[in-house]
Length: 117
Image 1 (cartoon, rainbow, N blue to C red):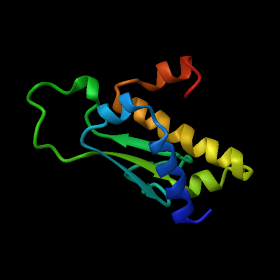
Image 2 (cartoon, rainbow, N blue to C red):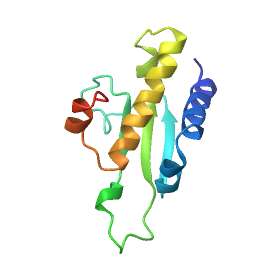
Image 3 (cartoon, helix red, strand yellow):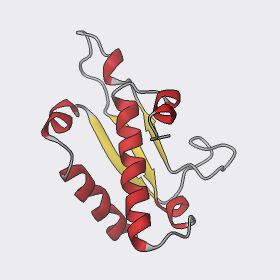
């Protein structure tokens, strides 16, 4: 899957999210990059996605004028999973939803508990 096709999967996944999610997504960018650099994944452990920012649950009334939060989805680690095309698409969407959950303030422990870890 080339970069453009990968971005298409992300775009389709975002478009399919419920309206309430779209309404809540504020000041956040979703970026596809080929792989994390050492800053994102210093041990190179196959990180699939990463949320960097201030979760919505922690933003106060004084939150304004900030640079956008960023959700990174890393293409090569997904491809390295060696999944068939449909399963790969599902994993990309799963990663995106996982990172959006972090934007909403849901931590990894809770995501693990509900099966989205």
